[in-house]
Image (tube, rainbow, N blue to C red):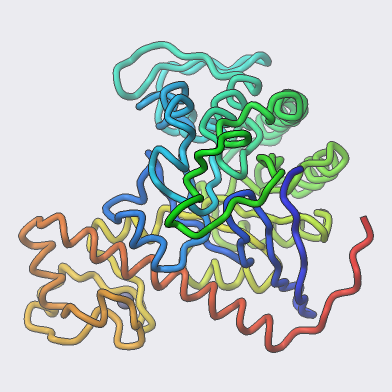
Length: 388
Ligand SMILES: [Zn+2]
């Protein structure tokens, strides 16, 4: 049995608050998902990520496949147990990294041949193989293997890319349905969630698979893509190929076009967005899930997101600033450390700087979603019952 999604409230603006029941966690939506690229939300230990209230984190299939290898992770009981993360996880299909990180890749109808960015070794990913890898990793949610259409792309290129993505979506789904019972934790009594973690795994639930709407910036291709994926009947739907360099109005236009085409009864995920005001805007429009490397990556470069706007903590003006990173934030960093100290850590290249900055930025992003959920809960009517 795959995920169960309940809508709790909806607003006239299309916003919705819900609960997504996954094997390792009941996730309150809308939700922001921190990115844990290679089995780690960079610079922050898992217990801290948990204490910040993260309900679901991402793992990158491409990175974990190359190192330490999905078969090794499978033998170690799956990604949850390997990294000691008791809550929900989502893995991407590996496609995006293959396109963005590797050279000499060759795309055919069968799949993508590419060279590892680590050692130049040759690899071949097909939709079926991406499913195999994701089942071995064992995230609660897997993603269909797709081709992320670059920006800008002309119409012929976007059409051809979409043709591949749609064929690969069906192959991903067929293979996933036949093999998802092979996930390492399904019948494993040594679940990481038993014992002291206090998150009993929901019995009988297995992995879910989301389809990814592509089509570049062509709204009719986006519509076509959404309608065909909905016919295939995935457990949830993602809008991919955004935040690839297009102007923000276009991102918004594509999201606005696609959202109404997706079934109300299933979760909707916009991949790879965005700045704090963007994730708030999209959440209020009815996007249930978002992920982005921005809060973690920016933090490592000294960029903090605060209620007063962006703060480049390396700036000299903070050298003797005794105030917290964000006066309106009550995260463990803002309660304890000054801007002057955070700046000093960055100036001295102390690893603690990246850790503290990341903790604050994640707290800020997760806080936005908590606030949006509270607003939706307070100001919204109960939705009409959704017919299956
Ligand atoms: Zn803070």
